[in-house]
Amino acid sequence: AALTVTENSGSLSFEGFALSMSPGPLNEACLGQEDSVSFPDACEDQKLRFDIVDISNPLLFFWQPAISPQGTLTLYLNPEATGSTNVTVMLVDTGGTNTDAPTQNFIGPDS
Image (cartoon, rainbow, N blue to C red; front, side, top):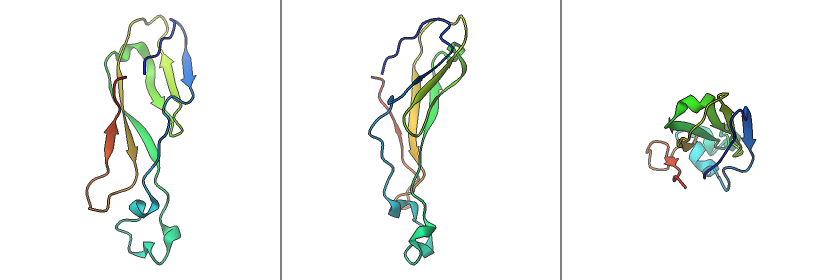
């Protein structure tokens, strides 16, 4: 999603930047835990996090942008910085898969 901000904006937050996110089911979080059937509370719900993969112009930021697990984007802009950038993020969940494959990561489109 394209955002436009003005020079000297400081830090900005955009609630609802990332929407309709859902971690995998509880049974994925329990994979490899033998007691998960007898003690289902031993497994925690999967958590989501966003990882910043790439920033094409990192000099625009005082601190790296962040997206909370609830989907709020926060930008910490450098004073007097101007220009444009592409920020690539990856949504990661904490669960495994039922085929013992590594955790799946998804990179969002540049829309």
